[in-house]
Length: 422
Image: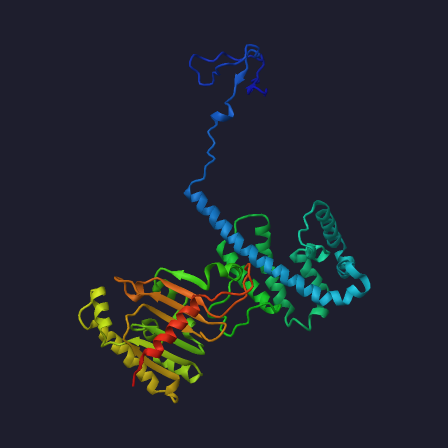
């Protein structure tokens, strides 16, 4: 093939028949010195390659990037945590004798190959200016997750006093190795593999002493991505189009079960009353949970206005609220300490429904719904908030109050102006 896109066809005579008139292979503007019998090939512009991405392709790429990003954050946290644990345990043993070469000494003959490779990569990074942080100018920072694991396994007697179950650590790292391999090569990561990696990472952080350790962490586990960018969205953990979607991901049992404190305000509090049995509420109260419930007064003019907004029959909403209050009164009557289960009503215009679980501690959860003119509570959008103050990555050190505190203050204000139900 020549640079002009011409190819000499094979054959005994080395010649080919001339192209007929109008043959599409005939090329306009072929130089006169082209050898006889040469057949012109299609130019690159004539191939018709499609370089644009359609909607479906972009959707697939975004999904891949989102999954890989989540997995990378988890892997980064695990690697940093494991690096810190290895340094804390092995440095005091080897550094007094070997100084800065303690990692090389700890690797020993079995790890000579990969530790020397890490040393070489460190030297190249030094020369090319890739070491942006002086804290990373050490061999330990250039070890991969499998190599950190190898150091731990080789010196397990040193780690055993701090970590109970070696097998559990190794199983979690095995599960992460699949994800690490996929992410490092920028291949597609399936949702089940990502879920497995997130569970393994959370379990491993807990084993290595880096987990949240909140008493109700099972209710709303802290997410690695949320921990890093949570300040961007105040304390909003998730948003749901309606309460049905919320309850698929967070059933009432998961939300209210095991609560130490429960404050709720709304018109009828159906999420609690209709989805959490009276027997469970009694058990919750007897276990020490302090409950305060604020209903809209069923005899107030605000209930009548709300009935008109929703197109309900006269008295339909007020009867529903009365039934819910009566049910909660029966629960209170079964308790040895009725003071732990308080019920009050307010006469103001209802503006939102709020369920604040463990709002007095660092592991609180809030479920908030604003009232829309033509939508019932089941159909209104839902915000899930995380209570307490967390340390997040931000440009200033002082954390700002989130939405949870705002709704908690609003609850306390309405509670003060409300009336108890006998």
